[in-house]
Length: 561
Image (tube, rainbow, N blue to C red; front, side, top):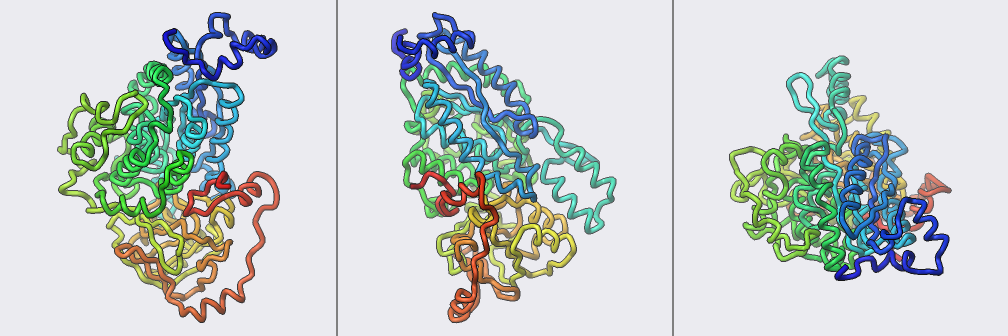
C-alpha cells in the first residue's frame, strides 16, 4: 500500500499483545493477509418491522460485497435501532421516535470506537435514521459515506396515486362520509406497496436530499428508489469512494461546514421539506462544531423560493424527481442560479461543482420542479416565529396555500389524544386555533411527532379554516396552518401552559410573530396559579432523555453539557 489507510484498525491487528482479539478476528473469517487492510463498519438501520427499513440488510450485503472486492478493504456489517414513525404515530410509542436519534448516534459511535474501524458506510432508511447516523459520523470523524435506503414506490387505488399520508387523511374522509368503509380499507391496503421510505417530501426524503446537497452521500442517492437499478449500482460503487476518502484522509468535518449545511438547508427549503429539518440540522451543526441557529434558518427562508410541487403540500412524490433526472439536476440548477455554493468538498473526493459537471440540465417541461422566476412561493415555507408565546422560537410550515395570517380563539388540549378525539367528533369550529401542549421534549416526553391531527383536519375539510399550534412537532407529512416547536414548552413553564379556551391567538407568518392576546397582568395571575404536571415517566430511557435533553430551539440534543 502506498499510504496506510488502516490507521485505527491496526491498533488491534498490528498489536502482537492482543492474541485473543486476533483469535476472534480469525473466527470471523479474516485471513492473515486481511490484517493489513482497512476495516470498514457497514451499519444499517435494518429491521423487519418497517417498510422504510426492511430492505436495508439486502443493501448492506451488496455494499459488503463491494467493499471486500476492493484490494485493501475488509467490511463488517452491524445494525443499529430504528423506530417506525408511521406505525407509532398517535400512540405512546411515538414518544421514542425523536429520542431514537440519540440512541442511533450513540450506538454507532460505540461500535466504531470500540472496534477501531477505519471508516463507515451507513445505510439509513426512516426519518430519525438520517440525522442519527450523521451525528455519529461527525462525532467519530473518520472517512464515511451515507447510502440512503431509498424511497418507496407509490400506491394506487381507484385511478389515484397513494402514499402513507393518504391512509391518515382517509380516516378524516370516512368520518365526514366523503368515502365509504370499503374505500377507506382499500386506500389503507394500497398505500404502501413495498420497501422504502415514505414517498413525499417528508422527513426521510427531506433529510436524504439535504445530506446529498451537503456532500455526505453520492449523487443520486436521495432520489434513487429503494428497489431501483440505480440503488443497486450505488451499493456497488460506494467502496471505490470510501477507499478514496481513506487514501486522501477526507473526514466528515472536512465536508460538513457552515456553507455545506446552508446548501443542505437551502435545497430542502426549495423542495418544501419537513419542519423536522430544523431539529436535525441544529443537532448536526452542533456535532460538527458549527455555529448554526434558528436565525440562520429564517435567513435562508427569506433567501430561497419554494419550487418543489411535492407532497404533502404539493402533489408529486420522490419517484417523480427520479423520473426527471434525480436530485442532481435540481442541485445543478440551484448551483447555476447562485443559490448553492459549489466549492464544498463531498464524499466523491471532489467538490459539489465538480460532481455536477456531467449532470444534464433540468427540463422545465414538467410540473414537479418550478423555475426560480416562477416559483410556487417567492420565499421559503418554513418560518421561525417569535413573540410572547414563543420567546425562544417556534417553527411554522407555511406554503402560502394556507394564507400567511391567522387569528382565532384557542381550543386547548393537554394531549394529542384529546385533540384527535375532538377533531374526529366534529368538536372543532371554523376559525379556531387548536392548541396541543405538554407534548414537548420533556412534557411528551420525547416531543412526539403528530400526523394524525393535521391529517384529520385536512381529511375533514378544515385545512383552510383552522390553525394548530403546539410545543410538540409535526410529521413531514403534515400540512395546513401549523406551528410547532414552541419554546419554552408547557412542561417547563412556557406561556403555552397558561393559554385558556377562548383566548385569542394571532399567527403572523409575514412578520414572524406568534402572540397570545392576553394582558400581562392576567398572564402573571395565571402563572402564580399554575402547578407543573408530574412527569409522565419516572424510569427507563425516556426518563434519562428528560434529564439530559436540550430545548427544541437547540435541537433536542442530549450531549449539550
